Structures are given as structure tokens and as C-alpha cells.
Image: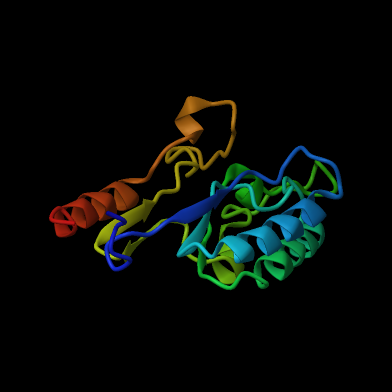
Length: 167
């Protein structure tokens, strides 16, 4: 027998935008159109929504492109933050990077860095594993001590897992 629609669902996962050709945003637009034809319950991303590793002005352009394409989805979508979304790179390399880099902008335009949501009795937990080194504040993709989850996020995760253990 086919599953009762109240108990069944499917979702789509979009990959990383980075490293591809400039026309990658058009590929995303095509994916959105095809996803709308499929009609999943929701869409998730895997992070790196923008090319990133840049200063504020180009970050804002890339964010607007991505959000513009995703605004055409007919179902909810849930972003995940990646290093390309957060890491700030000034035009002048001698200029210091802001301590929070692009975290505030990401949260303003895409939402929380970590969160959970429920759908039809299942819980989805989105984590942010790119928090800076707690001692130095450094963000560096090539250093393990800069690829971490804060004590605050781990405490939140523990509480979320406890609260949703019957899902």
C-alpha cells in the first residue's frame, strides 16, 4: 500500500554554490523551477549559499542573487551556513577583518546559524560547525581548532535532542 500522505513526505537538498562558473546562479534558478514541478514538502541547503570570502559589497550582491532565485520556490526552504557564507575577506588584505565577519549579515538575510524545526513528526537539526577558535577568535578552514561548535551551541543541541527524543 502507498503511504498515507499525512505520514509521508519528501524533501530536496541543494548543494554548494561555490567553485563553479559565474552562470551557477542560473543553474540554481533552473533547479528551483524543477523543484517546483516536483512539489516536495521542503528544501534544504548544505551551506555555501554564496561564493563568499569577500567584503561586504560583493557579499551583499551574491546574497541578493541567491535569495532572489530561492524566492521563486513554492515551498519553504531551510538554509545551512557554510564557511563561504561567513568568512570575510577585505579588499585590502592589510585591513583587519571584523570579529564576527559575516555572521550578522548571514543571520539578517538567511536566518539563525543553528536551529531545529519539526515537520510531520520528524525533527531536523541544523548545526553550525564553523565557529571560531574560542581563544584567538581566528576563523580558518585549514585549522581544526577553528572548525568547532561553541559550548552554547552544544548546550542548545543537548537540550534540543532531549526535547525531541520522542520524535
